[in-house]
Amino acid sequence: MNEYTRPDSARSPEATALGAPMPGAQPPVLRPGGEEPLDGPPVEPPAAPARHGFLSPLNRRRLRNFRGNRLGYWSFLIFAALFVVSLFAELIANDRPILVSYKGAWLTPVFVDYPEERFGGFLAQTDYRSPEIAREIAENGWALWPPIPFSYNTINTDLPTPSPSPPTWMLTDQQCKAAAEARGGSTCRDLPWHWLGTDNTTRDVLARVIYGFRISVLFGLILAAVSSVIGVIAGAVQGYFGGWVDLSFQRFIEIWGGIPTLYLIIIISAFIAPGFFVLLGIMLLFSWVALVSVVRAEFLRARNFEYVRAARALGLSNLRIMTVHLLPNAMVATLTFLPFILNGSITTLTSLDFLGFGLPPGSPSLGELLAQGKDNLNALWLGLTAFFVIAAMLSLLVFAGEAVRDAFDPRKTFS
Image (tube, rainbow, N blue to C red; front, side, top):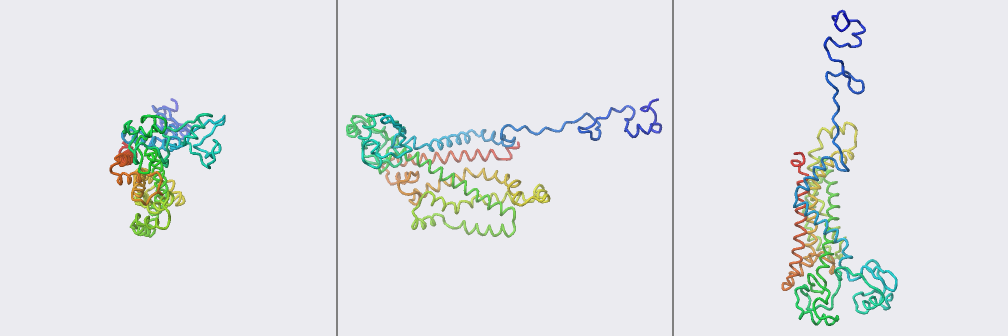
């Protein structure tokens, strides 16, 4: 009889100390690292979800949901493409050549302001559209012009019809004959084309649309970004600390939000000439209030969660808890509202320009173009162009915002 078959009373002290198995038992299986034995085969710990690139599995699901909304996804791509193209407006619509080869020298008039004496003239600034300068460059080299040879402030004195002039493709050769003969031609094809016509000051509408689109989106992006940062900070402080801090902030916001922004801008415009940064600063004083309530609600909801209490018990500072543990949850709501805040910022600038309290006169503005369409009802191309451009821009932003909202929807993300 060996030690595995004799009764427990007969087992040797050594076997008992070593924890020998009972009769018929399976050999002991130790855990990794030599810990206490298990009753079954070794179990491997669950592997962490694979991380591909810089996106976590959760963000990959959100991106997949965003792409799943085809209308919003393509709206975002179209809007982003239009904005990127407008950033190079000087290379698309300009009354200066992009590149000039003159007497063996390479010149870039788009980026450098050359005096006219460089081309044999005597003026301080070169007018590259004048026949003399064009002839001088043609005889001693060549010039590469943008697709639209007009800038947003180019005054055209050789229009075939009185200003506001219709788009060139709407004119007949008889209407273009006089202007074409002055340039050595005979038909509309011999004239520089105004694809969307001109406004009441002979400026090209298409060029102003391109520049106006860029300045509107830049204004909206800057205003939305800065106001979101201020709104998130204010809402986080309110929601996390609560009590008298929350109560004081809420009373201040109720008073501050009741101030009429438009009247304030009108009053300030009487003392300060309105400009891009002046309008941006005035609008920033009030636009940050939009996100405070959303972020405040998220911090109020999460400040008493177990993981926040555990972080406090571990001695983490309030700033670290707010920024590392609570802010990511609040940013979901912030990112969802961001496209709509951008939409509202662009609408505000357009409205101010339409009323005459926006950008300085002469600036490329969609609102100012809309106002010209109202004042010149016989020039349908002005009002229709402004309307369709503004409607398309805001619609693309709304569709993209809905796609972002669906992407961050917990019901779709975790389903």
